[in-house]
Image 1 (cartoon, one colour):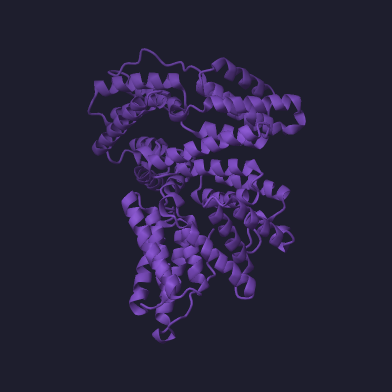
Image 2 (cartoon, rainbow, N blue to C red):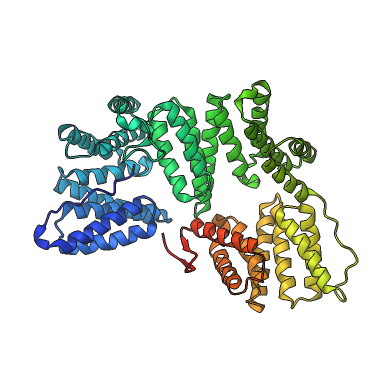
Length: 560
Protein backbone atom coordinates (compact mmCIF):
# COMPACT_ATOMS: atom_id res chain seq x y z
CA UNK A 1 0.00 0.00 0.00
CA UNK A 2 1.39 3.41 -0.94
CA UNK A 3 2.31 6.06 1.57
CA UNK A 4 0.39 9.21 0.82
CA UNK A 5 2.26 12.20 -0.56
CA UNK A 6 0.35 14.61 1.72
CA UNK A 7 2.18 13.35 4.84
CA UNK A 8 4.18 16.24 6.25
CA UNK A 9 7.44 15.83 8.15
CA UNK A 10 7.28 16.62 11.81
CA UNK A 11 9.12 19.80 12.85
CA UNK A 12 11.19 18.42 15.70
CA UNK A 13 14.07 20.91 15.76
CA UNK A 14 12.78 24.36 15.05
CA UNK A 15 16.10 25.96 16.06
CA UNK A 16 17.77 24.50 13.01
CA UNK A 17 15.72 26.80 10.79
CA UNK A 18 13.60 26.12 7.72
CA UNK A 19 16.37 25.08 5.33
CA UNK A 20 16.74 21.53 6.63
CA UNK A 21 12.96 21.17 6.81
CA UNK A 22 12.65 22.13 3.15
CA UNK A 23 15.31 19.57 2.26
CA UNK A 24 13.46 16.98 4.29
CA UNK A 25 10.19 17.75 2.52
CA UNK A 26 11.90 17.35 -0.88
CA UNK A 27 13.40 14.08 0.27
CA UNK A 28 9.99 12.82 1.47
CA UNK A 29 8.49 13.56 -1.93
CA UNK A 30 11.33 11.73 -3.67
CA UNK A 31 10.91 8.85 -1.21
CA UNK A 32 7.26 8.60 -2.30
CA UNK A 33 8.34 8.42 -5.95
CA UNK A 34 10.78 5.70 -4.95
CA UNK A 35 7.96 3.69 -3.40
CA UNK A 36 6.13 4.01 -6.72
CA UNK A 37 9.10 2.50 -8.56
CA UNK A 38 11.33 5.43 -9.52
CA UNK A 39 14.83 4.12 -8.87
CA UNK A 40 16.63 7.39 -9.51
CA UNK A 41 14.36 9.12 -6.99
CA UNK A 42 15.53 6.68 -4.31
CA UNK A 43 19.16 7.70 -4.83
CA UNK A 44 18.24 11.40 -4.74
CA UNK A 45 16.17 10.92 -1.58
CA UNK A 46 19.03 9.12 0.17
CA UNK A 47 21.41 11.97 -0.64
CA UNK A 48 19.01 14.56 0.77
CA UNK A 49 18.28 12.52 3.90
CA UNK A 50 22.02 12.28 4.52
CA UNK A 51 22.32 16.06 4.22
CA UNK A 52 19.47 16.58 6.70
CA UNK A 53 21.01 14.12 9.15
CA UNK A 54 24.24 16.12 9.26
CA UNK A 55 22.20 19.16 10.37
CA UNK A 56 19.76 17.44 12.76
CA UNK A 57 21.34 14.08 13.69
CA UNK A 58 18.85 13.58 16.53
CA UNK A 59 15.74 13.87 14.33
CA UNK A 60 14.11 10.44 14.48
CA UNK A 61 11.69 11.01 11.62
CA UNK A 62 14.62 11.71 9.29
CA UNK A 63 16.34 8.59 10.61
CA UNK A 64 13.24 6.50 9.86
CA UNK A 65 12.89 7.88 6.35
CA UNK A 66 16.58 7.25 5.77
CA UNK A 67 16.18 3.63 6.85
CA UNK A 68 13.14 3.20 4.60
CA UNK A 69 15.06 4.68 1.65
CA UNK A 70 17.91 2.23 2.24
CA UNK A 71 15.41 -0.63 2.06
CA UNK A 72 14.08 0.79 -1.21
CA UNK A 73 17.65 0.92 -2.52
CA UNK A 74 18.06 -2.74 -1.58
CA UNK A 75 14.82 -3.55 -3.41
CA UNK A 76 16.33 -2.28 -6.66
CA UNK A 77 19.70 -4.06 -6.43
CA UNK A 78 20.18 -7.20 -8.52
CA UNK A 79 22.94 -8.74 -6.38
CA UNK A 80 21.27 -10.81 -3.65
CA UNK A 81 23.99 -10.21 -1.06
CA UNK A 82 24.03 -6.45 -1.59
CA UNK A 83 20.24 -6.35 -1.58
CA UNK A 84 20.04 -8.15 1.76
CA UNK A 85 22.80 -5.99 3.26
CA UNK A 86 21.00 -2.72 2.39
CA UNK A 87 17.67 -3.99 3.70
CA UNK A 88 19.21 -5.15 7.01
CA UNK A 89 20.97 -1.81 7.35
CA UNK A 90 17.74 0.08 6.65
CA UNK A 91 15.80 -2.02 9.17
CA UNK A 92 18.35 -1.18 11.88
CA UNK A 93 17.75 2.53 11.36
CA UNK A 94 13.98 2.04 11.39
CA UNK A 95 14.14 0.00 14.60
CA UNK A 96 16.35 2.63 16.21
CA UNK A 97 13.91 5.40 15.27
CA UNK A 98 11.00 3.43 16.78
CA UNK A 99 12.96 2.78 19.99
CA UNK A 100 13.84 6.45 20.27
CA UNK A 101 10.33 7.72 19.56
CA UNK A 102 7.78 4.87 19.74
CA UNK A 103 4.74 7.16 19.79
CA UNK A 104 5.55 9.02 16.55
CA UNK A 105 2.87 7.50 14.32
CA UNK A 106 4.54 8.40 11.01
CA UNK A 107 7.70 6.55 12.10
CA UNK A 108 5.61 3.50 13.03
CA UNK A 109 3.83 3.73 9.67
CA UNK A 110 7.15 3.84 7.79
CA UNK A 111 8.48 0.76 9.57
CA UNK A 112 5.20 -1.11 9.22
CA UNK A 113 5.07 -0.39 5.50
CA UNK A 114 8.63 -1.65 4.97
CA UNK A 115 8.16 -4.76 7.10
CA UNK A 116 4.89 -5.88 5.50
CA UNK A 117 6.41 -5.62 2.02
CA UNK A 118 9.59 -7.61 2.74
CA UNK A 119 9.53 -11.33 1.85
CA UNK A 120 8.78 -13.13 5.12
CA UNK A 121 10.82 -16.16 4.02
CA UNK A 122 14.03 -14.12 4.06
CA UNK A 123 13.55 -11.24 6.49
CA UNK A 124 10.88 -12.36 9.02
CA UNK A 125 9.54 -8.85 9.70
CA UNK A 126 5.76 -9.31 9.54
CA UNK A 127 5.48 -9.69 13.32
CA UNK A 128 6.85 -6.13 13.60
CA UNK A 129 4.36 -5.03 10.95
CA UNK A 130 1.52 -6.49 13.04
CA UNK A 131 2.75 -4.56 16.07
CA UNK A 132 3.08 -1.30 14.14
CA UNK A 133 -0.30 -1.46 12.42
CA UNK A 134 -2.10 -2.52 15.59
CA UNK A 135 -0.60 0.55 17.25
CA UNK A 136 -1.63 2.78 14.31
CA UNK A 137 -5.18 1.44 14.32
CA UNK A 138 -5.43 2.19 18.04
CA UNK A 139 -4.13 5.71 17.36
CA UNK A 140 -6.84 6.32 14.78
CA UNK A 141 -9.62 4.86 16.93
CA UNK A 142 -8.59 7.06 19.88
CA UNK A 143 -7.81 10.21 17.89
CA UNK A 144 -9.72 9.98 14.57
CA UNK A 145 -9.42 13.71 14.00
CA UNK A 146 -5.61 13.49 13.76
CA UNK A 147 -5.28 10.77 11.12
CA UNK A 148 -7.10 10.71 7.74
CA UNK A 149 -9.66 7.94 7.43
CA UNK A 150 -8.12 6.71 4.18
CA UNK A 151 -4.95 5.95 6.15
CA UNK A 152 -7.06 4.01 8.64
CA UNK A 153 -8.13 1.81 5.73
CA UNK A 154 -4.47 1.33 4.79
CA UNK A 155 -3.59 0.36 8.36
CA UNK A 156 -6.35 -2.28 8.42
CA UNK A 157 -5.40 -3.53 4.97
CA UNK A 158 -1.69 -3.85 5.82
CA UNK A 159 -2.47 -5.56 9.12
CA UNK A 160 -4.58 -8.08 7.20
CA UNK A 161 -1.67 -8.63 4.80
CA UNK A 162 0.77 -9.10 7.68
CA UNK A 163 -1.47 -11.71 9.33
CA UNK A 164 -1.83 -13.42 5.95
CA UNK A 165 1.96 -13.47 5.48
CA UNK A 166 2.34 -15.06 8.91
CA UNK A 167 -0.22 -17.73 8.09
CA UNK A 168 -2.65 -16.44 10.73
CA UNK A 169 -5.74 -16.90 8.56
CA UNK A 170 -8.31 -16.43 11.34
CA UNK A 171 -6.78 -13.12 12.40
CA UNK A 172 -6.62 -11.99 8.77
CA UNK A 173 -10.28 -12.91 8.27
CA UNK A 174 -11.26 -10.96 11.40
CA UNK A 175 -9.53 -7.81 10.12
CA UNK A 176 -11.06 -8.30 6.68
CA UNK A 177 -14.50 -8.46 8.30
CA UNK A 178 -13.74 -5.33 10.28
CA UNK A 179 -12.78 -3.50 7.08
CA UNK A 180 -16.02 -4.50 5.39
CA UNK A 181 -18.06 -3.47 8.43
CA UNK A 182 -16.27 -0.14 8.79
CA UNK A 183 -16.68 0.86 5.17
CA UNK A 184 -19.83 -0.92 3.96
CA UNK A 185 -21.91 2.26 4.31
CA UNK A 186 -19.10 4.54 3.24
CA UNK A 187 -20.03 7.48 0.97
CA UNK A 188 -16.97 6.56 -1.08
CA UNK A 189 -18.70 3.40 -2.29
CA UNK A 190 -20.86 5.21 -4.83
CA UNK A 191 -19.75 7.15 -7.87
CA UNK A 192 -16.13 6.07 -7.60
CA UNK A 193 -13.82 6.01 -10.59
CA UNK A 194 -11.05 3.50 -11.24
CA UNK A 195 -8.80 5.70 -9.10
CA UNK A 196 -11.26 5.93 -6.24
CA UNK A 197 -12.85 9.01 -4.76
CA UNK A 198 -10.45 11.38 -3.04
CA UNK A 199 -7.85 9.12 -1.48
CA UNK A 200 -10.15 6.20 -0.74
CA UNK A 201 -9.49 2.88 -2.52
CA UNK A 202 -11.83 1.85 -5.31
CA UNK A 203 -12.03 -1.64 -3.81
CA UNK A 204 -14.64 -0.30 -1.38
CA UNK A 205 -17.20 -0.29 -4.19
CA UNK A 206 -19.99 -2.90 -4.19
CA UNK A 207 -18.90 -6.14 -5.84
CA UNK A 208 -20.81 -5.76 -9.17
CA UNK A 209 -19.27 -2.32 -9.76
CA UNK A 210 -15.91 -3.58 -8.55
CA UNK A 211 -15.92 -6.39 -11.11
CA UNK A 212 -16.64 -3.90 -13.91
CA UNK A 213 -13.86 -1.63 -12.68
CA UNK A 214 -11.48 -4.60 -12.46
CA UNK A 215 -11.96 -5.37 -16.14
CA UNK A 216 -11.15 -1.77 -17.11
CA UNK A 217 -8.04 -1.68 -14.93
CA UNK A 218 -6.89 -4.99 -16.38
CA UNK A 219 -7.38 -3.68 -19.92
CA UNK A 220 -5.15 -0.70 -19.13
CA UNK A 221 -2.51 -3.03 -17.75
CA UNK A 222 -2.57 -5.03 -20.99
CA UNK A 223 -1.23 -1.93 -22.77
CA UNK A 224 2.14 -2.86 -21.26
CA UNK A 225 2.81 0.51 -19.62
CA UNK A 226 4.75 -0.04 -16.40
CA UNK A 227 2.71 2.41 -14.32
CA UNK A 228 -0.57 0.83 -15.48
CA UNK A 229 0.71 -2.63 -14.57
CA UNK A 230 1.88 -1.45 -11.14
CA UNK A 231 -1.44 0.26 -10.42
CA UNK A 232 -3.31 -2.87 -11.48
CA UNK A 233 -1.15 -5.07 -9.23
CA UNK A 234 -1.88 -2.85 -6.24
CA UNK A 235 -5.59 -2.82 -7.05
CA UNK A 236 -5.89 -6.58 -7.49
CA UNK A 237 -3.80 -7.22 -4.36
CA UNK A 238 -6.45 -5.35 -2.39
CA UNK A 239 -9.38 -6.87 -4.27
CA UNK A 240 -8.29 -10.48 -3.77
CA UNK A 241 -7.64 -9.85 -0.08
CA UNK A 242 -11.05 -8.26 0.51
CA UNK A 243 -12.89 -10.79 -1.68
CA UNK A 244 -11.07 -14.14 -1.28
CA UNK A 245 -14.14 -15.95 -2.63
CA UNK A 246 -13.77 -14.19 -6.02
CA UNK A 247 -11.25 -16.36 -7.88
CA UNK A 248 -11.23 -13.94 -10.82
CA UNK A 249 -9.24 -11.42 -8.77
CA UNK A 250 -6.52 -14.05 -8.25
CA UNK A 251 -6.43 -14.59 -12.02
CA UNK A 252 -6.29 -10.86 -12.76
CA UNK A 253 -3.47 -10.39 -10.26
CA UNK A 254 -1.52 -13.31 -11.70
CA UNK A 255 -1.89 -11.99 -15.24
CA UNK A 256 -0.57 -8.58 -14.19
CA UNK A 257 2.32 -10.33 -12.46
CA UNK A 258 3.09 -12.03 -15.78
CA UNK A 259 2.95 -8.65 -17.55
CA UNK A 260 5.36 -7.22 -14.99
CA UNK A 261 7.73 -10.13 -15.62
CA UNK A 262 7.76 -9.33 -19.32
CA UNK A 263 9.34 -5.96 -18.45
CA UNK A 264 11.86 -7.48 -16.04
CA UNK A 265 15.53 -6.61 -16.36
CA UNK A 266 16.69 -10.18 -15.74
CA UNK A 267 15.60 -13.56 -17.05
CA UNK A 268 15.18 -15.05 -13.58
CA UNK A 269 12.45 -12.59 -12.67
CA UNK A 270 10.78 -12.94 -16.06
CA UNK A 271 10.55 -16.73 -15.88
CA UNK A 272 9.63 -16.74 -12.18
CA UNK A 273 6.73 -14.34 -12.73
CA UNK A 274 5.50 -16.19 -15.81
CA UNK A 275 5.63 -19.61 -14.12
CA UNK A 276 3.96 -18.36 -10.93
CA UNK A 277 1.23 -16.61 -12.94
CA UNK A 278 0.61 -19.67 -15.11
CA UNK A 279 0.18 -21.93 -12.09
CA UNK A 280 -2.16 -19.48 -10.37
CA UNK A 281 -4.37 -19.03 -13.43
CA UNK A 282 -4.49 -22.79 -14.06
CA UNK A 283 -5.55 -23.28 -10.44
CA UNK A 284 -8.27 -20.65 -10.90
CA UNK A 285 -9.62 -22.55 -13.93
CA UNK A 286 -9.68 -25.76 -11.90
CA UNK A 287 -11.77 -24.00 -9.23
CA UNK A 288 -14.13 -22.35 -11.72
CA UNK A 289 -13.85 -24.08 -15.12
CA UNK A 290 -16.92 -22.30 -16.47
CA UNK A 291 -15.80 -18.79 -15.55
CA UNK A 292 -15.66 -17.02 -18.91
CA UNK A 293 -13.52 -14.13 -17.71
CA UNK A 294 -10.83 -16.43 -16.32
CA UNK A 295 -10.86 -18.35 -19.62
CA UNK A 296 -10.24 -15.06 -21.44
CA UNK A 297 -7.40 -14.21 -19.07
CA UNK A 298 -5.68 -17.57 -19.50
CA UNK A 299 -6.05 -17.60 -23.29
CA UNK A 300 -4.53 -14.13 -23.61
CA UNK A 301 -1.71 -14.86 -21.18
CA UNK A 302 -0.90 -18.13 -22.92
CA UNK A 303 -0.63 -16.38 -26.28
CA UNK A 304 1.72 -13.72 -24.88
CA UNK A 305 4.23 -16.23 -23.54
CA UNK A 306 7.05 -17.26 -25.92
CA UNK A 307 5.99 -20.61 -27.32
CA UNK A 308 9.59 -21.80 -27.43
CA UNK A 309 9.92 -21.63 -23.65
CA UNK A 310 6.40 -22.23 -22.36
CA UNK A 311 4.47 -24.17 -25.04
CA UNK A 312 1.15 -22.58 -24.04
CA UNK A 313 -0.46 -22.07 -27.46
CA UNK A 314 -2.29 -25.38 -27.10
CA UNK A 315 -3.74 -24.12 -23.80
CA UNK A 316 -4.93 -20.97 -25.56
CA UNK A 317 -6.60 -23.10 -28.26
CA UNK A 318 -8.45 -25.08 -25.59
CA UNK A 319 -9.75 -21.90 -23.97
CA UNK A 320 -10.75 -20.15 -27.20
CA UNK A 321 -12.50 -23.30 -28.43
CA UNK A 322 -14.28 -23.57 -25.07
CA UNK A 323 -15.56 -20.01 -25.47
CA UNK A 324 -16.68 -20.72 -29.06
CA UNK A 325 -18.62 -23.75 -27.84
CA UNK A 326 -20.22 -21.75 -25.01
CA UNK A 327 -21.33 -19.20 -27.60
CA UNK A 328 -22.94 -21.94 -29.70
CA UNK A 329 -24.91 -23.03 -26.64
CA UNK A 330 -25.66 -19.54 -25.31
CA UNK A 331 -25.40 -16.89 -28.09
CA UNK A 332 -26.39 -14.17 -25.63
CA UNK A 333 -23.08 -14.56 -23.77
CA UNK A 334 -21.05 -12.49 -26.24
CA UNK A 335 -21.62 -9.52 -28.46
CA UNK A 336 -20.93 -9.97 -32.17
CA UNK A 337 -17.58 -8.16 -32.00
CA UNK A 338 -16.51 -10.28 -29.03
CA UNK A 339 -17.11 -13.62 -30.73
CA UNK A 340 -15.41 -12.33 -33.88
CA UNK A 341 -12.33 -11.48 -31.81
CA UNK A 342 -12.39 -14.92 -30.20
CA UNK A 343 -12.51 -16.59 -33.62
CA UNK A 344 -9.68 -14.37 -34.87
CA UNK A 345 -7.45 -15.15 -31.88
CA UNK A 346 -8.21 -18.85 -32.31
CA UNK A 347 -7.12 -18.62 -35.95
CA UNK A 348 -3.79 -17.09 -34.91
CA UNK A 349 -3.24 -19.97 -32.49
CA UNK A 350 -3.98 -22.49 -35.23
CA UNK A 351 -1.49 -20.70 -37.47
CA UNK A 352 1.18 -20.68 -34.77
CA UNK A 353 0.79 -24.45 -34.37
CA UNK A 354 1.01 -25.02 -38.13
CA UNK A 355 -2.68 -25.93 -38.45
CA UNK A 356 -3.01 -23.90 -41.64
CA UNK A 357 -6.21 -25.49 -42.92
CA UNK A 358 -8.02 -24.76 -39.65
CA UNK A 359 -6.72 -21.19 -39.62
CA UNK A 360 -7.70 -20.50 -43.22
CA UNK A 361 -11.17 -21.97 -42.67
CA UNK A 362 -11.76 -19.48 -39.86
CA UNK A 363 -10.38 -16.64 -41.97
CA UNK A 364 -12.83 -17.46 -44.77
CA UNK A 365 -15.71 -17.36 -42.28
CA UNK A 366 -14.57 -14.01 -40.88
CA UNK A 367 -14.01 -12.45 -44.30
CA UNK A 368 -17.54 -13.46 -45.31
CA UNK A 369 -19.34 -12.07 -42.26
CA UNK A 370 -17.54 -9.84 -39.77
CA UNK A 371 -16.88 -6.20 -38.96
CA UNK A 372 -14.69 -4.11 -41.31
CA UNK A 373 -11.90 -4.02 -38.74
CA UNK A 374 -11.77 -7.81 -38.41
CA UNK A 375 -11.98 -8.18 -42.19
CA UNK A 376 -8.97 -5.90 -42.58
CA UNK A 377 -6.98 -7.86 -40.01
CA UNK A 378 -7.88 -11.15 -41.67
CA UNK A 379 -6.98 -9.73 -45.09
CA UNK A 380 -3.53 -8.82 -43.74
CA UNK A 381 -3.09 -12.36 -42.43
CA UNK A 382 -4.09 -13.82 -45.78
CA UNK A 383 -1.65 -11.50 -47.53
CA UNK A 384 1.12 -12.33 -45.08
CA UNK A 385 0.61 -16.05 -45.51
CA UNK A 386 0.19 -16.01 -49.27
CA UNK A 387 3.21 -17.54 -51.00
CA UNK A 388 5.03 -14.69 -52.79
CA UNK A 389 5.82 -14.85 -56.49
CA UNK A 390 9.45 -13.81 -56.73
CA UNK A 391 10.95 -12.34 -59.87
CA UNK A 392 13.38 -14.78 -61.43
CA UNK A 393 16.38 -14.39 -63.71
CA UNK A 394 17.63 -11.14 -62.17
CA UNK A 395 21.37 -10.63 -62.56
CA UNK A 396 23.53 -8.89 -59.97
CA UNK A 397 25.97 -7.99 -62.74
CA UNK A 398 23.56 -6.18 -65.06
CA UNK A 399 20.41 -5.66 -62.94
CA UNK A 400 21.67 -4.90 -59.45
CA UNK A 401 19.05 -2.18 -58.80
CA UNK A 402 16.17 -4.47 -59.76
CA UNK A 403 17.74 -7.35 -57.79
CA UNK A 404 17.96 -5.19 -54.65
CA UNK A 405 14.39 -3.90 -55.05
CA UNK A 406 13.03 -7.45 -55.29
CA UNK A 407 15.15 -8.62 -52.36
CA UNK A 408 13.91 -5.67 -50.26
CA UNK A 409 10.29 -6.46 -51.18
CA UNK A 410 10.72 -10.06 -50.02
CA UNK A 411 12.55 -8.91 -46.87
CA UNK A 412 9.67 -6.58 -45.97
CA UNK A 413 7.18 -9.40 -46.48
CA UNK A 414 9.31 -11.47 -44.15
CA UNK A 415 9.23 -8.69 -41.54
CA UNK A 416 5.43 -8.80 -41.78
CA UNK A 417 5.52 -12.52 -40.97
CA UNK A 418 5.65 -14.33 -44.33
CA UNK A 419 7.88 -17.34 -43.68
CA UNK A 420 8.35 -18.22 -47.36
CA UNK A 421 9.37 -14.65 -48.19
CA UNK A 422 11.86 -14.69 -45.31
CA UNK A 423 13.64 -17.70 -46.79
CA UNK A 424 13.68 -16.21 -50.30
CA UNK A 425 15.00 -12.87 -49.03
CA UNK A 426 17.77 -14.61 -47.11
CA UNK A 427 18.86 -16.47 -50.24
CA UNK A 428 18.94 -13.29 -52.34
CA UNK A 429 20.75 -11.15 -49.77
CA UNK A 430 23.29 -13.87 -49.04
CA UNK A 431 23.96 -14.03 -52.77
CA UNK A 432 24.31 -10.21 -52.94
CA UNK A 433 26.64 -10.09 -49.91
CA UNK A 434 28.81 -12.84 -51.36
CA UNK A 435 28.92 -11.06 -54.73
CA UNK A 436 29.97 -7.73 -53.16
CA UNK A 437 31.16 -8.14 -49.54
CA UNK A 438 32.12 -4.44 -49.40
CA UNK A 439 28.57 -3.21 -50.02
CA UNK A 440 27.10 -2.14 -46.65
CA UNK A 441 23.50 -2.30 -47.93
CA UNK A 442 23.83 -5.93 -48.99
CA UNK A 443 25.56 -6.77 -45.70
CA UNK A 444 22.93 -4.98 -43.62
CA UNK A 445 19.97 -6.61 -45.32
CA UNK A 446 21.70 -9.99 -45.18
CA UNK A 447 22.13 -9.55 -41.42
CA UNK A 448 18.49 -8.55 -40.99
CA UNK A 449 17.25 -11.46 -43.14
CA UNK A 450 19.45 -13.86 -41.17
CA UNK A 451 17.93 -12.65 -37.88
CA UNK A 452 14.42 -12.95 -39.35
CA UNK A 453 15.10 -16.53 -40.39
CA UNK A 454 15.78 -17.46 -36.77
CA UNK A 455 12.52 -15.96 -35.56
CA UNK A 456 10.51 -19.07 -36.41
CA UNK A 457 13.06 -21.54 -35.12
CA UNK A 458 12.10 -24.04 -32.43
CA UNK A 459 15.70 -24.14 -31.19
CA UNK A 460 16.73 -21.47 -28.71
CA UNK A 461 20.40 -21.53 -29.70
CA UNK A 462 19.52 -21.23 -33.40
CA UNK A 463 17.19 -18.28 -32.86
CA UNK A 464 19.55 -16.40 -30.53
CA UNK A 465 22.62 -17.22 -32.62
CA UNK A 466 21.09 -15.85 -35.82
CA UNK A 467 19.83 -12.74 -34.04
CA UNK A 468 23.27 -11.98 -32.57
CA UNK A 469 25.04 -12.63 -35.88
CA UNK A 470 22.48 -10.52 -37.74
CA UNK A 471 22.95 -7.58 -35.39
CA UNK A 472 26.71 -7.84 -35.77
CA UNK A 473 26.47 -7.75 -39.56
CA UNK A 474 24.21 -4.68 -39.53
CA UNK A 475 26.43 -2.84 -37.05
CA UNK A 476 29.52 -3.58 -39.15
CA UNK A 477 27.68 -2.28 -42.22
CA UNK A 478 26.87 0.94 -40.34
CA UNK A 479 30.53 1.40 -39.48
CA UNK A 480 31.16 1.59 -43.24
CA UNK A 481 28.17 3.80 -43.98
CA UNK A 482 27.13 5.52 -40.71
CA UNK A 483 24.63 7.91 -42.33
CA UNK A 484 22.67 5.27 -44.23
CA UNK A 485 19.11 5.63 -42.93
CA UNK A 486 18.01 2.19 -44.21
CA UNK A 487 20.69 0.49 -42.12
CA UNK A 488 19.64 2.45 -39.03
CA UNK A 489 16.06 1.38 -39.72
CA UNK A 490 17.11 -2.28 -39.97
CA UNK A 491 19.15 -2.20 -36.78
CA UNK A 492 16.60 -0.10 -34.89
CA UNK A 493 13.69 -2.42 -35.56
CA UNK A 494 15.72 -5.57 -35.04
CA UNK A 495 16.88 -4.29 -31.65
CA UNK A 496 13.36 -3.10 -30.82
CA UNK A 497 11.83 -6.50 -31.62
CA UNK A 498 14.29 -8.58 -29.58
CA UNK A 499 13.39 -9.42 -25.94
CA UNK A 500 15.13 -6.81 -23.79
CA UNK A 501 15.65 -9.28 -20.97
CA UNK A 502 17.89 -11.41 -23.20
CA UNK A 503 19.52 -8.96 -25.62
CA UNK A 504 19.48 -5.49 -23.98
CA UNK A 505 19.20 -3.80 -27.38
CA UNK A 506 16.42 -1.30 -26.66
CA UNK A 507 18.83 1.56 -25.92
CA UNK A 508 20.54 1.02 -29.28
CA UNK A 509 17.11 0.99 -30.94
CA UNK A 510 16.33 4.33 -29.27
CA UNK A 511 19.50 5.84 -30.70
CA UNK A 512 18.68 4.54 -34.17
CA UNK A 513 15.12 5.86 -33.99
CA UNK A 514 16.38 9.26 -32.86
CA UNK A 515 18.78 9.31 -35.81
CA UNK A 516 15.95 8.45 -38.22
CA UNK A 517 13.66 11.06 -36.67
CA UNK A 518 16.27 13.78 -37.11
CA UNK A 519 17.08 12.66 -40.67
CA UNK A 520 13.42 12.84 -41.70
CA UNK A 521 12.89 16.24 -40.10
CA UNK A 522 15.86 17.55 -42.05
CA UNK A 523 14.71 15.88 -45.29
CA UNK A 524 11.08 14.61 -45.38
CA UNK A 525 11.64 13.09 -48.84
CA UNK A 526 13.74 10.25 -47.39
CA UNK A 527 10.80 8.02 -46.47
CA UNK A 528 6.98 8.19 -46.19
CA UNK A 529 5.37 10.17 -43.33
CA UNK A 530 3.59 6.98 -42.20
CA UNK A 531 6.99 5.45 -41.43
CA UNK A 532 8.04 8.60 -39.59
CA UNK A 533 4.92 8.47 -37.40
CA UNK A 534 5.54 4.80 -36.66
CA UNK A 535 9.16 5.52 -35.70
CA UNK A 536 8.11 8.31 -33.33
CA UNK A 537 5.51 6.08 -31.68
CA UNK A 538 7.91 3.15 -31.31
CA UNK A 539 10.59 5.51 -30.01
CA UNK A 540 8.30 6.48 -27.14
CA UNK A 541 7.46 2.83 -26.43
CA UNK A 542 11.15 1.88 -26.43
CA UNK A 543 11.99 4.71 -24.03
CA UNK A 544 9.25 3.64 -21.62
CA UNK A 545 10.44 0.04 -21.86
CA UNK A 546 13.78 0.98 -20.31
CA UNK A 547 12.26 3.48 -17.87
CA UNK A 548 13.48 6.61 -19.66
CA UNK A 549 10.53 8.78 -20.76
CA UNK A 550 11.55 10.68 -23.85
CA UNK A 551 10.81 14.26 -24.76
CA UNK A 552 10.48 14.04 -28.53
CA UNK A 553 10.68 17.82 -28.84
CA UNK A 554 14.20 17.87 -27.47
CA UNK A 555 15.20 14.27 -28.26
CA UNK A 556 16.42 13.95 -24.70
CA UNK A 557 15.91 10.89 -22.54
CA UNK A 558 15.55 11.40 -18.83
CA UNK A 559 15.93 8.99 -15.97
CA UNK A 560 12.84 7.77 -14.13
